[in-house]
Length: 202
Image (spheres, rainbow, N blue to C red):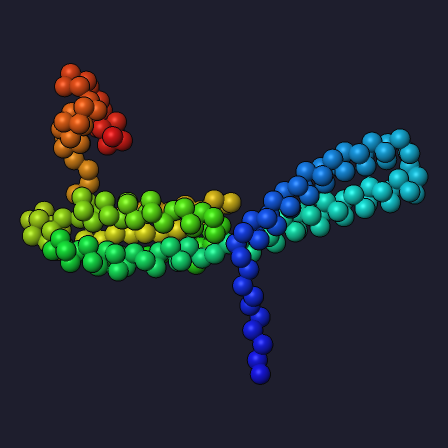
């Protein structure tokens, strides 16, 4: 029989483990400061050198432990992205639009806690692209475009950050329409002047 190398761990336990590692890092810093003070007081003695070497080893191991726990908490962002092809397909069908969704960087790893938080904001922005960005095939052809619109959803690792990009080849935001809606909702006075960028931010 083959044994599985996987084990299920409750995310709450990983969260608790990360908190404990955080406390360990705090005490590691205090230990390093105390070790330096004691080492200076003892001078160049063998036991002073042994103390500092041990403190440095504790520091190195605790850093590795922190990195290991953080790595365990990471999941491919594909866990979030996988819901969007069907969402876009259904919305496009309802609105009589032709839309191709391109996904990139699904293997990019991101902390589980962030994965739990970004799903709904991404749904909102994808819906915006479908509802307000991509035009109907007739409108697109009239503007010299292909009848099928494109939405790109990508994730890339940049240093210790993950950059998520949503881009579509639709008509963009009409600042004049935003201005009219903002005035109708009392968010903007008729005599108030805003730049196009400020209107888009509304």
